[in-house]
Image (cartoon, rainbow, N blue to C red; front, side, top):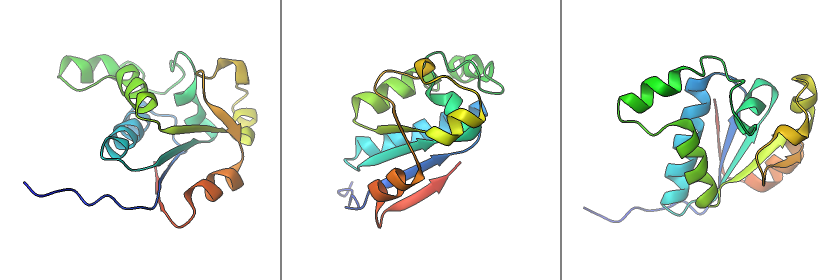
Length: 131
């Protein structure tokens, strides 16, 4: 198998959705890209901010996590831990937190609170994937 060519530009993941399915895949993508050495920034806004809370229970269809784990797929908690260990930068949108009435104290340790300008500056000319 050939070597993987890792783009130098960062990958930005914009998580707008508050569903388990999209939040789960945002972390699959983040962990995967970080595992091959890519710089990754996950920016959550509006309902997507729920994916960055300590318990993550505010996601729509949160019960889906049990189903994916039973089927041999990494669960939400495992993916978030892997992303963190791999150095994925997590940012919760300040306005998104307010829009969802989420207190900053509910966020995972290490999550930054910033605005879209911070996200765009971090990504520069890199790619942005929206979920």
